[in-house]
Amino acid sequence: MLQATASRLPRPRAMPWPALRAALRRRPELLLTPLLALALLLLWEAAVRGGLVGRFVLPAPSAVLVALGAGLADLSLPWHALVTMGEAAAGFAIAVAAGLVVGTLVAEFRILERAVYPWLVAIQTMPKIALAPLLVVWFGFGPSSKIAVAAVISFFPVLVTTLAGLRGCDRGQLDVLRALGAGRWRCFASVRLPNALPQIFSGLSIAVVFAMTGAIVGEFVGASAGLGYLIVQANARMDIPQVFAILLVLGAIGVLAYALVQAARRRLLFWSPQAEPSRT
Amino acid sequence: MSASLIAVRELSKVYPTAGGERVQALSRITLDVAPGEFVSLVGPSGCGKTTVMRILAGLLGGYTGSVVVGGRALHGPSRDIGVVFQDANLMPWRNVLANVMLPVEVLGLDRKAMRPRAEALLRLVGLAGFERKLPGELSGGMRQRVAIARALVHDPAILLLDEPFGALDAMTRDSMNVELARIAAEAGKTVFLITHSIAESVFLSDRVLVMSSRPGRIVDAIPIELPRPRGLDIIAAPAFAATVLRIRGLLEEGGAPATVTLAH
Ligand SMILES: Nc1ncnc2c1ncn2[C@@H]1O[C@H](COP(=O)(O)OP(=O)(O)OP(=O)(O)O)[C@@H](O)[C@H]1O
Ligand SMILES: [Mg+2]
Image 1 (cartoon, each protein chain N blue to C red):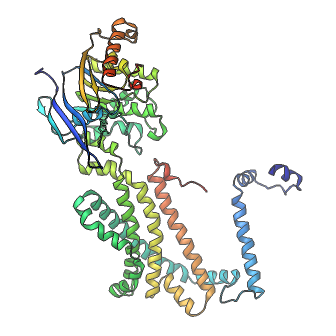
Image 2: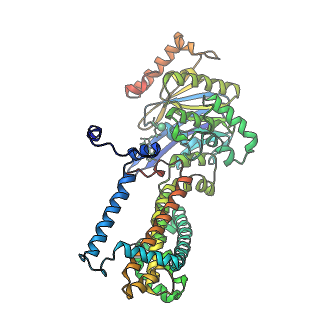
Image 3: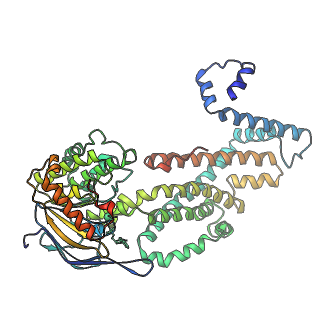
């Protein structure tokens, strides 16, 4: 029916690349999504210029673009972004290492599970972001306090998914190894850990976002560098276009980090049906 | 009986269940398997066949009675025993060849030297050319054949097989039966086979043990006097049909549902 309607419309100007045309026919969202975004941006720009929305509430897209250009040109945005990314990455690395180790120990040793698990549940239910001011007092205004906040809040997703993954292990596969006289370590490395990886990776995708959040909040509380610090400064100056420019950079970093985790997942979990998130 | 490779005496096993009650899975099982002998265990679903096998494989404790393998009281898993489980239990992240090589790695054998053997076993089970495929890309029957190759790769003296051909079509199953008979005869392996198919048990075995359920016990042991080597045409022999009928009768006495006793 769609085709019938399309044939009655005037023919669109022939596109130079047939491959591109075919791609767009298969996935029209490739064209529609940017077009929609452009339309919204134009509407937004018009609303701000027409005085419908206050400049301090919502800066015009052009103003945001100018602020972004200026920040990139004087290298202030890249520099502060690097600071925040470094803090988040360090916190993430600590969280992953600690989450994997603690999760493994708790899953492998009954006694530890009995002793530690209730505490973990108790801490888990607490909003750990509330620890940020305290951590800044403990670790100072430098990067280490931001690393600590990022590590503390991204630790739990890793821990919880590691535990769940190691617990839900396939008994049949374990039997194969045990029937060969395999020891505890061998069973862990050859069956338990690979079995847990799909779950661990869902934890990592959450943790990577949490780590960025932790670093930013740490910078809100008290810092002399980083995108969170920059946002607070710009906000105080009522430089709303710059705030928006920083948010754009943060969005880009978030997408990049998530894509990195997904790429690692595809490499490691080539065998798992859940490895490819279903396209929706 | 002193020469048996596997000697089980008065073996009983009770499972504790989540509800708190106890399930008597095995009741005073006594059985012997001589070196090089091919013994099958048939019985209705849930009668405790897998329980017997898991105990023999050293995977299940908490039983009463004695289990002696190779002259020594059973003490956990042994590298002289190869096990094919009811499910293929392949590692989905390992390709077919790597799955077959798993026992080689676990037992610390020479990988390079064992690789040709693993490839030959894959050819034997009809999976030549599938070495690099992942288990997720195979059918259920193909996976089960990989599991059979895996159980044989480290050349164990005893094979424990828990319904290894359940997922195969009749044709493949017949040819796998012929192969299994040949492997057992040529390599002088001792085989303990659990099966739902009476015809299969008669075709392959020197002796068929018949189990009944609730609680699981062995009701009879039928020696199979058919000459070896046996070809598939032996199915037409009167002695074959008579033995199948006799075992079926024993199973029906034990109260087995009819579906289980249907010969293949
Ligand atoms: N882990 C367990 N915990 C409690 N009960 C069990 C457990 N495993 C088996 N059982 C019980 O023991 C009995 C025997 O089980 P088993 O798996 O040995 O039967 P089976 O003869 O292998 O059956 P099938 O032919 O269907 O595989 C069953 O009644 C089952 O409910
Ligand atoms: Mg069973």
